[in-house]
Image 1 (spheres, rainbow, N blue to C red):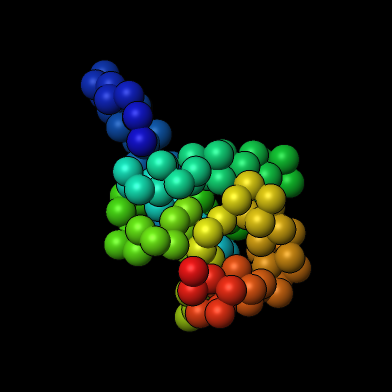
Image 2 (cartoon, one colour; image 1 turned 90 degrees about the vertical axis):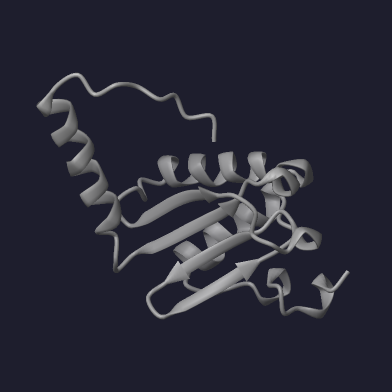
Length: 128
């Protein structure tokens, strides 16, 4: 969101963008995290959640195995902020995320390999 659009001035710039996209898409054995930053997500506090996850990835040197992306409306507004974790053959949808719960997901699920059931969309605690 809010990305600045710039004109590509040279073939070298285009190749640099191409290489970065290839690197970004090649994190196939790693983890892809998607945060809903549509209007409802932002209103519910998704931007600080996204920023905290981005900072955690950077501080812990996880850029080569964790890809963080933003998306628009996820379609489940009542559960925002929503964070989806994609691992090979599995997706975990975390709902009602806060900065604190997102950091716990990063530590326990992403680094520790243990998803946190109480934060998932299927948890009875999240059927608000």
